[in-house]
Structures are given as C-alpha cells and as structure tokens.
Image (cartoon, rainbow, N blue to C red; front, side):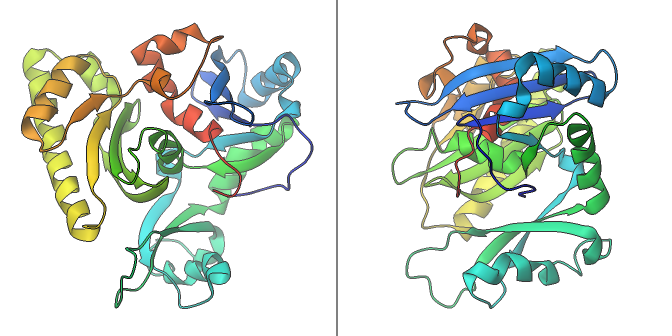
Length: 312
C-alpha cells in the first residue's frame, strides 16, 4: 500500500512500528551487499504519546532521511484469497475491490484495497488465476499514518506482516522448492508458505509467544500438540492446492523451549524442521543483541518489512 511517491533518501528501508509502550525501529541495507545488513534494530520506550516520541526519534535518528514503512496490526485489515478479475493484469488491483464487496462487512468505498497475484502452476489450464486481496478501513489507515504525519516523518509504504514474513522466508528457501515458515510473536503465530520469493498461502494461529514463556512442561506439550495439528492441516491443504510446489522443510522462529518444540514437530511431521537463525542469511555486526533468539523472534517481521525490495 503506497502512500507517497519516492524521493531522494538513504538507500534501503527503515521500518518503524508503534506498540503500546515502545517504538521499534529497524533499518536494513541490501544494495551493494553480498548479504543484507541490519544497520539498526532497536526499541525505544515511549515517554509521551506517539507523536512526541516520533518527534524525538526523528531528531535523534534523522528519520526523515530514510524511506520509511510501518506494519499494520493483524486486526486492522483483512486478507482474502479471491479469483482474479477478468481484466488485464495492470488493472487487476483496481478491479479486485469489486470482488470483495460482498466479503467485507463494511462498504467497499470505505476501504483501502491492494492485491497481489498468487503464482499458478506452469501450464495450468482451466483454473482461474487467484489473488490475495488486502482491505483495511480508511479510518484505520488514517489512524496509522497520523502520528507519522504529525511528526513530519514521511511514510512511503504501509505493509502487512504476511508480506514482511515472506521477505524473510525467501532468504531461506532452497532453490526451486518451497518453505513453510512458522513465526510467533506477541500477537500469535503466523505460518507462511513461499516459493521463489512468492507468497502462496498463510495461516494464523491463536498462540502468542507469551504462552510458551509461561507454560510448564505439560502445558507446553499441549501447545506443541495444537501447533502440530495446525501444521498438518495446513500442509495437507497446501499440497492439495499447490501440488506442483514441493515444500522442502519447516522453519520455526525461536520460542521458549525451542529445541523441544523442534524435536516434537520433527517427530510428528513428514518434513525436516529447523530453527530459524537470521545470522545464516544476513549480517548485523553493529546489533549484537540479534544473536539472541528471543530478540530475533521479536524483531522478525519488522526486519522483514525493512527487507522490502522495490517492485516486489
């Protein structure tokens, strides 16, 4: 969802996320690098309201010199798989809003809508192209943008977690094969299926990261059972929908008791299961705390949003 035209700024993207009590910031540079480099990844406690905190950070970090993006919260938008409109591809994003007018529970004229194509199998005939349509109420978009506008920080893009996680997953995909990436944060679990840097499918799980931290051994076993059931259903559904894409492995972000969870999933799924480690695909020499698994899990989607590539 693009809000402003590009201007002359530092290369790369900087993601700024507002939470209840802090502001998270990540800056990633890819141009001229053999591997992406995370040059900034930090959290700043709010000392006043959003605008006042952003004003302070704009001065301290020179935020107005960057190309900035932010992420919508999962409850602030809807993401739907729909049949692509029968129009030229260049017009599909505009036309798809009429596909969703009976799906969303508010007038489509009150929505900001964007969309992306779901890749089809080569030579697939008889099946209409599919798209992901993303819709958010205009007032939610306005509320997300307002503190940035008030602090004179130009937002160029508003992104969503599913696409930010796709940006991470593409760095771990085996050549020509798919990856199932399961990430947990304070809002819950997000499972994405990607191949060739494209998002094919996603599923959300109502299991926030805090559930693992506060669970004893028996409770964690119950959580693992829930995760395995969701994973099995999702893998079966993906195989039916996209049998031409071979999923090579499942990757999971670190959670408390991650080694036990990896072993449990590997025992109950028919795929290899690995713990995700960002150090395998990117560098962060000036952000040593990203070597800590818990910090990686907390910052994963923010870093993914800052991994955005123009035209993707």
